[in-house]
Image (spheres, helix red, strand yellow):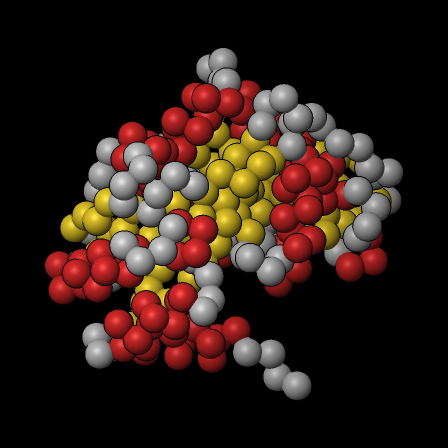
Length: 263
C-alpha cells in the first residue's frame, strides 16, 4: 500500500472513530462531540470497552465518549475549555470533582505520534540490527524488554527489530498488532547502551518495515516521558492526537500498587 501523510492520519482517525462511536470526520469539526460508549470489534485489542469516560483530541475539538450515566458530566466539562486545556491541570481537577460522586477519576493520559513521511528515515547506530518475527521472541519476555513486548498479549507481538553487540541483544523495538490497520511500536535499550542512537535506529527501522507490510505504525508516550517523545521526533514521528481516560477508583488503586517502586 502506498501511504501518504493524509492517508496515515485518516487511518488513525477511522480507528479512533471506531473506539469513540463517532465518525472519523468528527475529529476535524470545530464543535465538540459527546457519544455513548459501546464495544466495537475494530477497537484496539487492549482497550476495555465501553469506556466509563474517555476523551480524544486531534487538535480541532474534543470528542468525549462515555457510559450513559457519565455523558452529562463529560459534556459539561468539554464545553468549558478548548481542547488544549481540557487535557491539563488545573482544569482536570474540575473533571475529577464532577466524577467523584461516581467513584471515577482521571487515570490515563497519553500523546500519540504518527510517522511524517517527509521526515521518516532509517537512522544508524554502531550495532548490527536484525528484523525479528514472533518465533524469535521466545525467551525474550523479560523485564528489560517489557516496553517492546507484552507478555499478557504475546499473540499480538508480530514484528521486531533487535540491536546486537557481540551476539548479545542490547536493544529491542517490537510492535503489537493492536488493531487491523495500525501497529504500535515499543522500545527498550539496555542502560549501558543508551545515548548511542540505538533507540532511534530500531524505531525508525521497525516503522519502515511496518509500512512495507501495509500497516500504519504509531507510537505512544506519556506526557512527561521526554526521552521517549524525543526518540519519536528524531525518527520522523509527529504528535497526532491525545487521549485521556477516567477509570474507577478501585482500578486506579490497583494500578498504583502494581507500579510503585519500593524505596
